[in-house]
Length: 62
Image 1 (cartoon, rainbow, N blue to C red):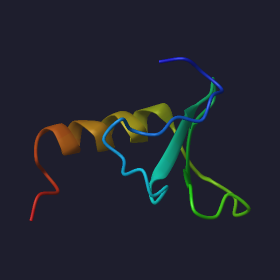
Image 2: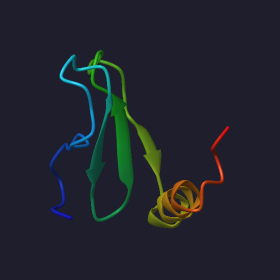
Image 3: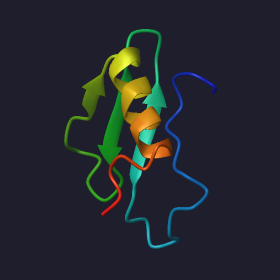
Image 4: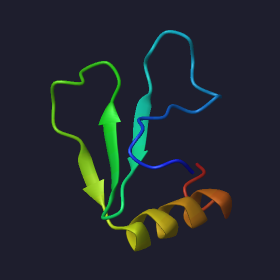
């Protein structure tokens, strides 16, 4: 994944109501695309990998 560029999922709606993710050398940043004035949430690469793994394993499915 390219670093230092805000990305949205290709599965996001065209309404702009989604989150954006940026991978940097130090962290993974997540922000609300509807209000970019708020500071992003920051996660370590390990935290982000654990989250993505949980999503792939359906850990958060209802």
